[in-house]
Amino acid sequence: MPYKLLFVCLGNICRSPSAENIMNHLVEQAGLIDSASQTLGSSIICDSAGTSSYHIGSPPDRRMTQAAQLRGIKLRGEARQFQKSDFEEFDLILAMDKENYRNIVSLDPTGKYRDKVRLMCDFCTRHTLKEVPDPYYGGPEGFNQVIDLLLDACEGLLQYIIGDRIKELDTGE
Ligand code: 4NP
Image (cartoon, rainbow, N blue to C red; front, top):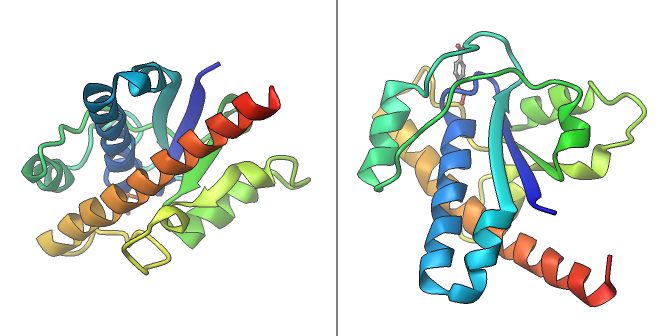
């Protein structure tokens, strides 16, 4: 069974599509440098969504696309809104900031899926910021910072998933 990741921000045009495409990029890279990870490549599926309906159907923000391009990452995707069925559909739901986190868990009042919802920055190993700052109303530096933070968090997340998968194999889950 593939491991399914959903990255969530407010608009689904800046932070979460970047996270989705960076993660796909890292998974592909892992496949290129380590043939044992080739299987991992096809067994991690990434998607992204926004808690708001503001930009449904829009492509990633042009400024975000430029910042990603500088790091050799192409942003693909079309914004959609987070929906309750995503709780069942995905193994892990990564919120970019605490407001996104609160909005996601508010759609799960019984807390059934609480363990699936995490803050993206929990997986950072080099940066100490606890949230991925919303770059939308700021200058170009904010967009570059988002890419830096997400590269760190996605690398940590990939290591976490590899560890989780090995545990599953060991315990036969
Ligand atoms: P994102 O950025 O949540 O990272 O996609 C934003 C995009 C749009 C808006 C705010 C943040 N907005 O207010 O329209």
